[in-house]
Amino acid sequence: ELKVEQNPLFLSMQEGKNYTIYCNYSTTSDRLYWYRQDPGKSLESLFVLLSNGAVKQEGRLMASLDTKARLSTLHITAAVHDLSATYFCAVDIFGGSNYKLTFGKGTLLTVNP
Amino acid sequence: GAVVSQHPSWVICKSGTSVKIECRSLDFQATTMFWYRQFPKQSLMLMATSNEGSKATYEQGVEKDKFLINHASLTLSTLTVTSAHPEDSSFYICSVPGQVLNQPQHFGDGTRLSIL
Image (tube, rainbow over all chains, first blue to last red; front, side, top):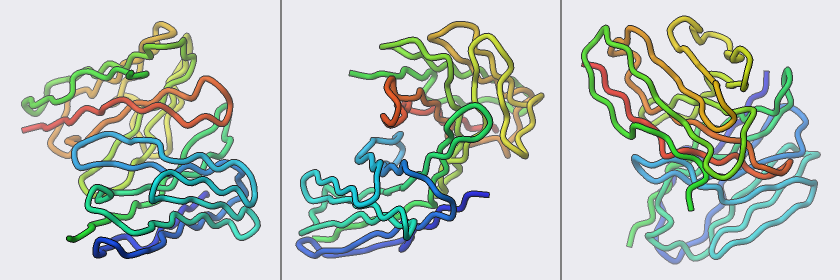
């Protein structure tokens, strides 16, 4: 059974600071996604990481993937309040006849002024 | 614009009633759609894979007779929660696979179901 573990689950940080969210998964996969969820809302796709060493950046967020270590990171640079949300990583595994996503538990990020 | 349309966005109903949630793919035909459930402050859990023209594939522990899925056309999948009870209260989200392999799934806005 695929397990996807995120840490930390809760992250409170000050504006302007840097931090990294980690996502470990237990089964070989070459497809990893990061999503953002605002309270009461659905998911917004942030990054798609498809190969070992992949690095994607958008604004203050940067995601990377190490398939050998089965580890992805989401790095936050100089955090701002607007980044406050829950961040999920998800791993895509082929099972049966389709690819299926398994999500981590999510990291609730609160950026304080 | 939106790729997936999900309705209704919010439902409050009495225990014992059945509730139908619709998920429409707006931009392209989808032979597969996914249904997820998310309890408060928890992650998304895949409930089932909806397959156009055939039976849905349910995840382990999901009651197929309670959560009826119909994928009658290439743009519409419905989830019916039958005889709903308070423990079925949750946030239900559908998604459509990316049109190209390796694209992320497109998620609907979700349906918040509250059973009194």
